[in-house]
Amino acid sequence: MTDTDPFAWFQSWMTEAEASEPSDPNAMTVVTVGLGGKPSARTILLKGVDPRGFVFYTNTHSRKGHELSSNPLISLLFYWKSLGRQIRIEGTVESVPGAEADAYYASRARISRLGAWASDQSRPLSDRAELERRLGHFEKQFPGEDIPRPPHWSGYRVLPERFEFWRDMPFRLHDRTIFERVPGGGWTRGKLFP
Image 1 (cartoon, rainbow, N blue to C red):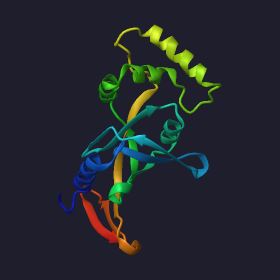
Image 2 (tube, rainbow, N blue to C red):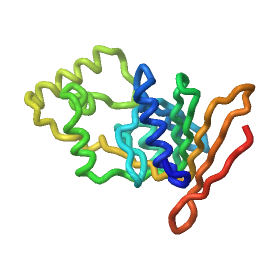
Image 3 (tube, rainbow, N blue to C red):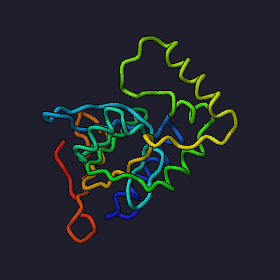
């Protein structure tokens, strides 16, 4: 792990989490900003990371999709209690290219692909039976494995501007390391008081 690459730090910590966390080490809290500056948080799964950023997928007509279309600022939080660690990431989002979204969508289980069609994510639902009826409708519409990606379902890439790596330490004297992007590329590294 290099001292100046926050992505290398992230990958090192994620590898440890994958070895020790009992469930969904890639779970992250995603915070978006809605109308009037109101924050909104939810936990979703990270589906990809590379030197460009962090990728997740969703219904773009969902609450988070609407919030991101009007305000691309975003924050991610990974928390691994068993390791006593968390990573905060702040940045902006961009849409992933259609081909990238298609490839990930095609890798999902059939029922998950049908669910992307059936769910009007974040909209009122009269009862569970309504969702099951909608799912049945799309099972009939797409009887085989060839299920196209819905036009309202895609991915976002978080382009980080700031990382904070937090480690639990005795007596609440926690260790906090930050990385901030500098204009023209690269990162500065520093420490914060606990």
